[in-house]
Image (cartoon, rainbow, N blue to C red; front, side, top):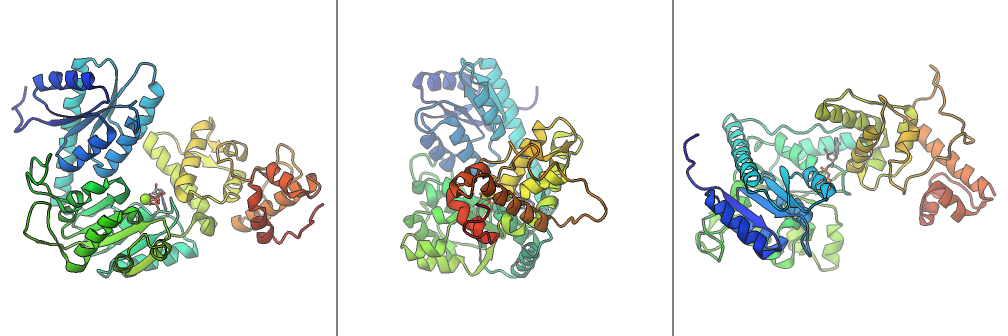
Length: 474
Ligand SMILES: Nc1ncnc2c1ncn2[C@@H]1O[C@H](COP(=O)(O)OP(=O)(O)OP(=O)(O)O)[C@@H](O)[C@H]1O
Ligand SMILES: [Mg+2]
């Protein structure tokens, strides 16, 4: 059909069963693929870190770490890597899960050789296109388009000012915050507003790099530096040259890795494994953590000197519960995204449903909110999401509104005079619910908590927040 490509594409085959690996390898080599076989998720990760792989094919069910977990890690490490998963008979569920995690396709075992070769060709082509688009964009000097950061609350505006201030400098930044608060978005925004915005933005998930491979992943290696190093390879520092390097989950670095990173940050130079020559490093480092690193320093598990090097300017991502006034805007944004993604009309959300959402404390923050909204939008047949529909969707830790026909009555109708301030209204709703639950349980807190669907250990928090006196409503 077309001109033969320069070199054979490399396929990483992962399966715990030797004979499967062997037969697939023979099959694919006949079709001029280069194959690397790995019999466990661990080995596969090691290969991914040291070799240039064009596409990965992995079994889903393996003893120990399974294919789904491997898929997740592999995509963290190489977001552009196409992955095809192999499933047993009758495991459509896991295939669906894999597709959701970003697998490009799946095949049922026993594998139909022609189908596999076809899928591989397509995946390799696709991977090439993605690369091409990326390099064309880089050539065209496309700016990294930052995702919109939603919210006009005071904490969000303070955050925007902080981002603008650090973006104008070269200072290292440590972004802290609970999970799902948008830390990656912040790192991106800093890069996009900085003078490095036309240069690479490279994110590394420190938790996904096996300890023994940290050096080669970050600093690269020379051909032959160790078994498996079949070509020279750039590390992340070289990839990010001139741009920004984001160290996500930096708190998970083991002590040897901490020491190696510190040396580079101090000297501004690094050496690829197996190469004596030092390379100058011109990257701006932004680190992200959801742990309390200062506490880790005190307990002796994170190096203090490294902490100071990374934490020149601290930025804190506000928790969603501290900016609940942004919730309606975030929900609309999410509904709009879903409608664009799925090509369906945008759903609306009722005021009652928003109140339900605002009465929860969102330990998983914006990410958790988006997931809840997505699930609700999927389940709701009509074009509007109501309180009753959002209830079963949100996590079990959520305040449960007594229904139907509670003492609160049906969802109130709104007139022009209604007080629409969400925060005040939801807070008062929360308080009413707690008082009502206490009343129904004759003041017995434990029982009231069960009714409310909250952990008994959280009662004190709510009582204090709403100044509910001991013995209230008993
Ligand atoms: N202010 C915001 N506006 C719009 N979307 C947001 C905002 N904050 C977070 N998100 C969205 O929430 C999701 C989670 O954000 P992100 O991945 O940046 O969180 P994170 O803080 O890195 O979480 P983790 O610690 O779990 O890695 C993403 O889909 C992101 O787009
Ligand atoms: Mg993150």
